Image 1: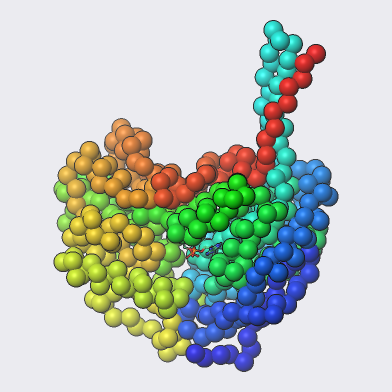
Image 2: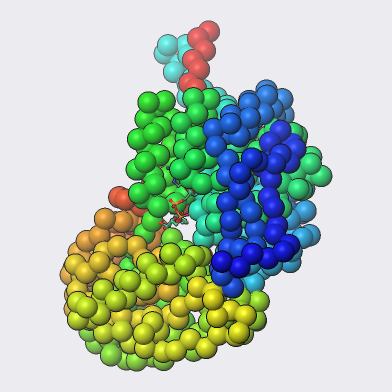
Length: 487
Ligand code: NAD
């Protein structure tokens, strides 16, 4: 393993101060395979200090008006936006994604998360009913919960972390956040801006480290009544078990095995480029990525031919090269795992039409040890195959044929997940019928990944519990009380 002389060394951010840790974890640049950063390997002690700092900050922060909190969130958004290029470069180096993706998706969305919740917190109203015959008025009052524990994954690091921090602090909570140990740098960079934005010490604390040590210490801490988690279904099961003795409030945003359903009357000129993006954007490392493409028999051959021809045009390589659309996968282990799915599909008799094992990677010298893989399309896969059932979370998508609407709904629903789906048809009746019957928290018809943050986001079945969005996050990050006044 190559160690650079100029290792970046991160520190925890507790009570408004950067605090060194007694031990550290190596963090790799996925596009070169080199260790370039050391991340605190925090445990119970560091989590304890962060929870105390968050508790101390809670009385003052929770009593600030929504407008005051909103102004601070807006200021933080401005500061991140001012440093957008530095954040995008860091996110790309840390995660492997292309700088173009970080510059156009990750960091703008992190900025928007703060702006969005800065605005939405000003517009909530609580409920009120009158019971005239009893001489009563009932109303609800909402208050922040306390210290929120926020745990985020490595695929969209700052984007998903700020999707939790922004609503949590907008509602008046204080937080202890734990980003993924594999992608901690942009969270650390954000901490450097908090004071300038006017975020009081202790309102946002960030503890870096592994899930098993730092994450679990946070989940098990008795003074953290709420956990918002985004990550894998397996980890969510563990978090649910560990938090059960404390009856914590949980929001769980988990994995997916998302179908795209493409009917004979779909507009392929829109559908093909969008389905390429939905399959391979961010190296297929988005929970919302398509990984099962059901194409109606009448257009199956044409779709497959055009889709594969376009997939072959996606170039993998140095993430800072603007002509590259496929960056590196997060880690060597993850790359091996994703590749193993392709091998298993081949062993089961499926056909790999492009990418892994078919086309050769042409990497620049500096990226030869990086964790790259080409967009891979697999056809003739059985529905019960692991490639059609399990989340692969890489640039691999399966294409299969179907005949009828009834059949495809059944097949699309026949997985344990239920996060996102796309439906392609020019028949409005068909898209409504199918969208209603899909077991999926989100359904995009004739598009993908267009989000209005006002509306609920989250999954069904093994894809999650709870929803996040303007109203949903407000409800999650506050406790409601019903008060009755009798005159
Ligand atoms: P992961 O579950 O391995 O880790 C997520 C986070 O949980 C990390 O910060 C990790 O350190 C922490 N963690 C791990 N074990 C823990 C434990 N025992 N206690 C507390 N924390 C623990 O997931 P990942 O590999 O980082 O991310 C990929 C997964 O995230 C995929 O399944 C993907 O679909 C999912 N994801 C879901 C959404 C969504 O919104 N539904 C969004 C992005 C990613």
